[in-house]
Image 1: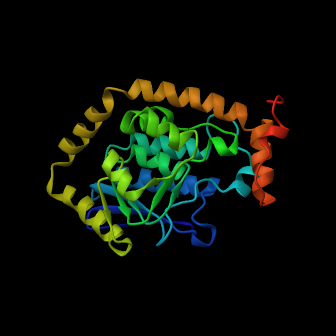
Image 2: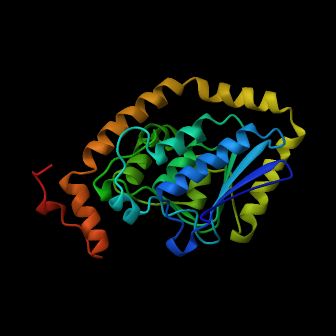
Length: 257
């Protein structure tokens, strides 16, 4: 089992449990995450959702081997289904980031309501280094949160964001010792048990309402560009270089995109 789902004390816990692959996400794992979010959404005993990884790693993002073996096509891909479910769930979502978050592991945090990080955790978005572009409105939301200059360093250069910097920039609520992150996140999620659920959910919808259309438009444009580049020479070179354990040579493919 690579996605674990459980409910305790009014909190649904979604745990990415594939530590041997640094919690890299496959298409079946995305489908299991959707199932978990859907189950939490309709369970009246659940007032909040916690998403977490394993000790020392939140998620390494997409599993490139799975990505290459079964390239996503069309709009109804599992990753998009997961992000849509995450963005549409009305119940509060709390992230317990137990280690490095990479790629979509950072993107999903932009759509969570509360984020708690382990000391030493980093947030990395290496889309460009893979010959791709940001996804799921991260090109919009990251710049809005932390400003264009720092977002450019993260998205264009792939510079990681440290846990302390993430809190300072407004990407996370707090940094805690690694062994305390999950318990703290669950305790914060349990606070919603004492609050009126309809009021909480209506307030969350209002917080997202102002730019909901812009987020949707950005995702559609990112999706078009992302999948247009997916089979391009830069992305192919990046993937081949990854499996050959070498630095990609983008100069070799320049002019062929």
